[in-house]
Length: 452
Image (cartoon, rainbow, N blue to C red; front, side):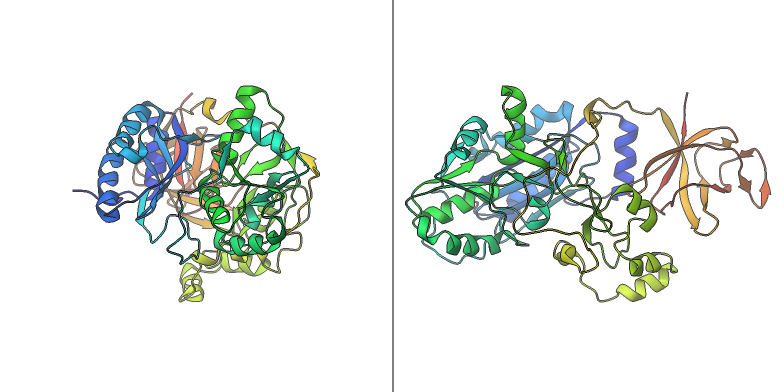
């Protein structure tokens, strides 16, 4: 029985592209008492793997927290796998504001101590004794009440690119840090204020609202379904958005636009920008905001030190990062002193610029293409890429596509190529070809021939 992934992210991305089928990005959660999380995890993996469902899912004795990508045609079959469990019957699936076929490229289901780490060790705390759920219209109305305090229970790198106007945005790196900070800050308002809270999809507020009721707060409210569901209701009901900017999401998109307002800056040059990137240096992977100009000049790096490192031979890069713990520090390093225009804590409610209108991701036209081969090497100084031809021959004059998780999709016409040291017009299966590319390629990149 298969209980783990057998394909790499790159291989999965190719299969998704070649299938050409629409996928949906969605999230859901449920607090429940699960007696055997390990068996629950294995059962879910078998059921979801059969439906080509991908995502990042945490299960624990206290419930399930899931962010996923599924083929649109399998949506009802996917719902049926949830209905098997009483605590997930009729569960709300938060569909993303912007869908992307590559939002998740693996199915990862992990057993955790808790589905939301809270740092609490109190047996009297009842996570099911929650606050009042508010729909978008009700949420807007209570925000207009001068007796309301609204709190963002997300982290600093999330609220920096988008938040509700007038919200308290704690300068924290984890959810568990925000609970005691807000509790201390609002000690004198347990009975005289409306404590209104929000997060991305509702799961953090579900626990936070129960915590603050446990702490003696009388009027506790939360945004039902979080920012994701709020945006859906705005569109459906024609409501005014009191959220400004972009909603950070924990998948390959790193964000979905709620309003056209850009309220943050490129961390490197200060230009209005709200696009996150991860540093290209595998020994860093710093999450930070980077505009297109800095992305090009710095080659996706956060600093000149990291830029120098990615140009080193791979063996030297591996040596430098040996023993480093990167994964759990990615977001914390978002406060690196190398980033001169970062912001956290008390944030502005004013727009710095207006974003370009995004194309509808769900309606994008699939490029008809055939796989030619894969990237082998990139010669930095010459800006030349080397590729192995594996499936079809390629000719000068062909329109090609170079695609990868970091490179994106880059199209160009093949004017000239070198095969085995000679400039010729055709390369056959098994040949190694080199040609100029006006961008940096990666070893994970694939090369396709675009069919007219």
